[in-house]
Length: 637
Image 1 (spheres, rainbow, N blue to C red):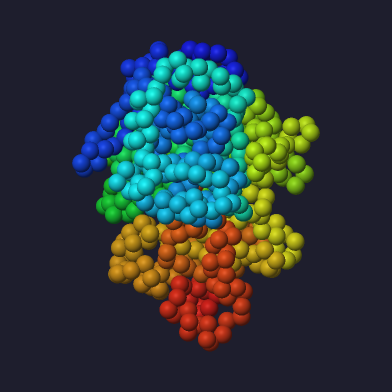
Image 2 (image 1 turned 135 degrees about the vertical axis):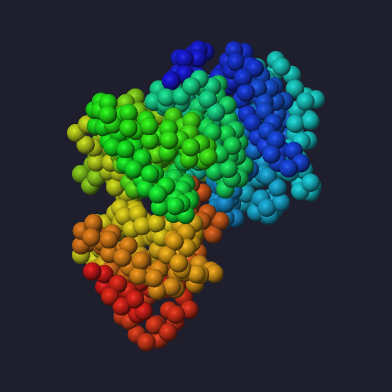
């Protein structure tokens, strides 16, 4: 249920420190923050809300002793660890502006943010981060003056987080702390979030206390949760979604944040904690679905049939709820029985049996993934928003959702669709503008307050928004046709063998694609079909796999119009990720990076087949041929 906790001021006048003060005074004994530590890294350490405020006060004094002043930017590059979470709040209490930088950022991106933000201080995790930050201390064009390091053994000549805290413990004065945070106003900047840079240099989005508190209050009204619910925090704090869900909304709700330092361990954390809420970007839900499908593929046929029958009942029930209809009594009874006998035992093993709110955002969710989870009684409430809108603009809710849509606007936010399909929005949660190098802010909205989001979509007659793609990512073929790459990619990815896809066709008469074998489902599929392959490359080269990929592309093309169809493709075996640069930290495709990295392969897909290319292809990723599996790129039927 939406929180019924007392607000210490009207929402548009509130600041984050006022919420922390309320939590410590009225909910001080409740758990606020937990993280793993100890010799084996399995024991949980927990701080109450009273503990959190005491530590924040000490840290604020420590950072003040380093010369941090009201209004200045302080950069943070750490994982989801307590030093990050507590430092963020401590800086806010000083009136400073915390700016989290993605841990996967390249040195040139870090340098750009350091110069652009004019920050004098950065707080980083350890040696891996120091290697990218230390050169900036000697760069005359960068204002950076000092580093604080969380991992003390790796700090070298730099200050440590522990020394900042110890210094703060000596210098802390309660009256100074209380005075400092009470000087903050709702219109003051709370944070700057740099966009992940899918199409160029990251841009600094300045968000105020008012932007964030109003966003949190309005989002809270749509989230059906028990009071003081736990949140599993594993996405980067440089992402607006985790800043809202992992810092700001818990402050509003006096909720409990559990930090998961390793995103790869999130499935294990879910199995252990059995959370009531879970947020994942589309790629996370895709990966979880792939893991479940891989397990199902190894079950006896009789058990699989029972699960599939239960899945169909769950989807039929979800369809009635989606249409706002009362679920027929017979269906409800059948579903309840199948859920108890078949679905719940498996969901319990996965730690997903207590989920009451599940959500996704940041990119169009593949409809087959949404339908897959609906078959388990898990309705993913897909939402849409941007960093520039302080998070969500539209959201599906239990009392009003359409699977495949991104919901309806939250309170106080307006939408309009331009003639070319671009979505415009305005409201109090829309940011004031982009940060400029001189510290000023440049508005990105027009005179009437409308902000162009860069997304393409449509509103249906019931007010639900349906996304098409990013405006800048639309493919314009040589015939002048516009194609949504996300639509094509999500369609071809419905086959379990295909984990990732990128389509290309700008300036060409047809589309080509790079396809990546799913690293989890492909081996399971091979095992089920009696295929022995020691490596992903061997698996991709197997004739049966090639034929199945051909069929997958044919099946996708059958559901697409002629302009959207994939004419030729190349099958790759190395999964794309943030570390290798093909994905943003929020797991969206960096199309420009992928196109540059695989430029020769893409151009080869537009070249005429010849003998030399055929010979080279035998040692490289498979080039798909629907009509002649052993030959070069082909004309898809």
